[in-house]
Amino acid sequence: MSVELFFQYIVAGITYGIIYAIVAIGFNIIYNTTGIINFAQGEFVMLGSMIAISLTPYMPLLLAIILAVIITMLIGALIEILFIRWLDSPSVLRMIIITIGLSILIREVALAIWGENVRALPYFTGNEVSSISFGGVHISPQVLWVIGVCTVMVLILQAFFKFTMVGRQMRACAANREAARLCGINAKNMVTLSFMLSAGIGAVAGCVVSPITYSQYNMGTGLAIKGFTVAILGGLGNSMAAVVAGLLLGTIESFSIWIMPTAYKDAISISILLLILFLRPGGLFGSKEEMTLKEF
Image (cartoon, one colour):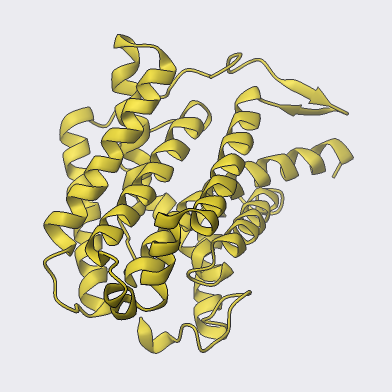
């Protein structure tokens, strides 16, 4: 393998790894606040990109993306209010079944609205043939947008949870919801906000990756599997660890095509997920006590 090809794989791994990490962080935001594993998370990524694509012919790209993110956040809130809020101490299995059902429902509605056609947002800068060269490594400008936007989102989320009052209230609900209620925090509103935040970051990720990965009604399923794998790999609930785990998975997938056909790339994440669940259920950065196989 040449040095140029090696670094080309690294860049591809970082790009896809950050995407997976953003989806995993969406899982973690909802899990930390509610204990729910939302398997419809990948559909938020799909909705963000598809809505933005539909709005682009009628308005500037930036405005279309902003509106798509807002609409997706409202859909996330609606899902929580209609399907989650009224449940009284549901079991983990029940919530998994509900969120999988919601994923299927959203996907079928998307199929009815947009059909099976593959679509894409225009490149934010340049086009599909333009690239930036660093020592023989060719990088699409959109890749820099993906890395930059997703990195900024992670930093903003960290600051939000650490320094803002609402972020602290969400962390309080994650630590002990009953104690948070006794302190006057509206736990139900915090849960709704967690769904909105999760949907919003998923929509932003879907918009920035759409020009290079393209968008289709069924793209959410694969992203949900990859995101869940990264969330488990980093330790469910640990968002910073999810970034490291996402980069790790993305890099492994990128280099895998050097030794095996591309068709087997998706099998790698499933294999890693199974290995982690069997050998270290708490993830690489968590303890076994934090999550056991029995919880699944």
